[in-house]
Image (cartoon, rainbow, N blue to C red; front, side):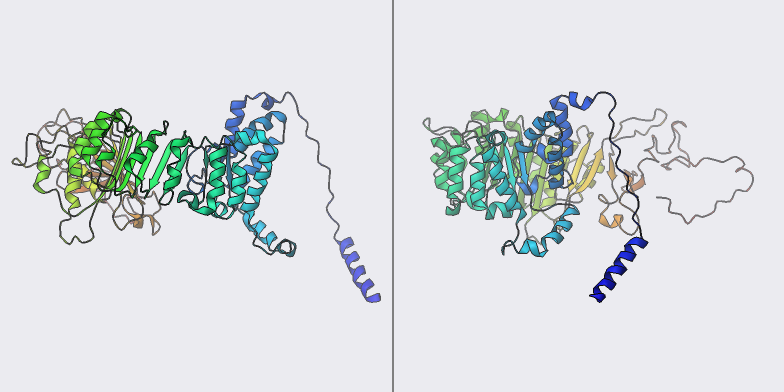
Length: 585
């Protein structure tokens, strides 16, 4: 007993020797005047809450993994918005509409709080509750299921439900019970077995077909042909996006299924080699036509050619509705692409991805240029086959054909271009060299046209590169020096970023990401001059001045103005000394 008293006495003495700082009660907050936050309209409050929790404004039909908005922690943002809903009744009504319109269930915090929670879960009282592994996302889904069944008014507000991959794969029963209470659901993340007709997702499919008739996006893969044929019976008539992958059905059945979706505007057909031009052409009057969709994606459909797409565009009126067209490994070739652009008069985005083994050859001189007044975005991704061993790759002729079309101003509204040639921007810096014998009345070599005079953003990537390199091509000013006989123009400028346009190695070694930003200007002799983008603008004449007559002078080929002369520098033997500083920085 005396031993314990000895320890207690020491602890008491230690507490008395270090008195705690005096604590003062917090002063009550005194509010002066009126609270104007209570008078904010609901639209302004909803906009403010969208900044508090950005993912509540996510109304895209993309899965949880690819629809993240912002760089913050989604769970922390959700908690802060829930705290806003507890402040007053006016805020609660607005916050509840946003909390339950687009629901996102994440597995972890994307901040420091996840490390703190992981340490707490390692403690004994957490491990003793259950021998199974702790799954926070599954618990959050179960709590959401209980909330929507207890509050049907909240369940009717839910339109988007996004769940992580592992949660929707392991908690199919909870997911089925949750969506059964949401009659106005438009999009939900589903497990992979749902798309290929897996028997483990039968209950989930039945709940969606009976309780959620307003779905807007659905995917069918090989094995789900029976579920696809149920669409004409009245299921999911409001589908807007339909993706079909490796589906094997009768062509007439597919035409009937597509005709049963009046709101369909985005259609993807992937790995369906049995499709041919007859699917797009109006054959029999008793069968419905192929729908005039706005977005059409064809992947690995080698039997669909340009003739089939042209007949569909001309006879079904799809040329007025088609907005985006993506072609990958199809029967549409680059040689016939100009006829397709002529038929699609309202096409805004075109993507063609093709692996070629032969070049255009001499036929390139007779091909009409790629011409379209509505096209603003082009993915021209032509790559060589792996067995090509020639010194000159076949893809070079295709990119030369595209370059000649751009120089001929055949694509006047094109603003963004994606190519798989890292040197394509060099083809647009200087005007094309046109041989006098290479012209033709209808070919691309007939003349340089009006010259390349449009602003263009080029994203290029080689076969061994993982990221797109951005290059901005600016049009020439077209102005001429009145006192000089040489016109300025015809050589567009190209703005290169040090960390992107000139390669990732420029951003290393202490130079910084944007420390070496420059403009590439043609010097008139086949080479280029790298000058600072903001400090040295492009000169008006070859001697860098605005006047000076039309005669030649020794300073004719100086591309920049002479440096300023300081007072007293002349006549005093001014010595120009070398500098060890980097003039580019």
